[in-house]
Length: 224
Image 1: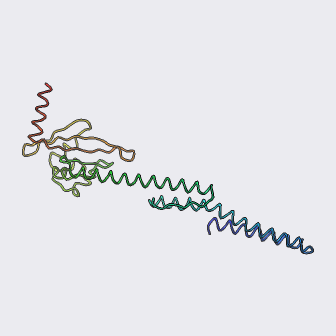
Image 2: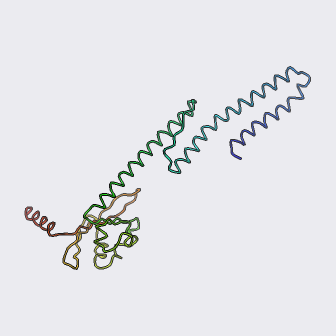
Image 3: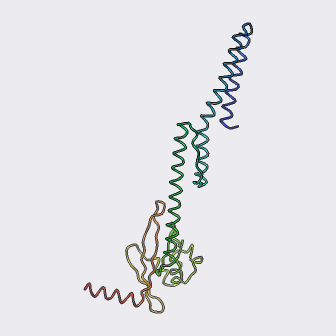
């Protein structure tokens, strides 16, 4: 039995008990007996109405908590005409609207980020909190020689060949170069970002093509 039903039962039993105690005293005076009976009936009705009003706020809180727990932010409560309850309804509706807009914004940003990663010519490897590969974009999968599914869960050091050791040795803020078997070079840059309050690492893999090396050489010459 819910707390609300127990409280209503308590109110009903209390009034019945009081009526039973008073009835023998008023049996000789029917006018007083009738007045007391009317009073008890009115008291019961008012008590039940007040209890319903009191628990209406608790029901709104309970339903609101359930919707939030389920991630259901589209449901809105209607105003009841009771100021104290309507303030609670307005607060929940405003909070649900803000959460729905924030979730939509995050989904749009995630979709945009996914498109950027898919189209990026540079390889991007994102590590999980344990330092293992969580995600790779197509360019990174080609560089690693593994599919995104096969690479997921591996530590950088577990990547086959010398590329794995170079990935594991990469440190934040410092570029590291890996020489491929064909004589090409891959620049490895390690960085960090914050995810839910904790640091995570990512690795940027950029193939040093002749055009890129020529551009860097020209930049160094101008600097000198």
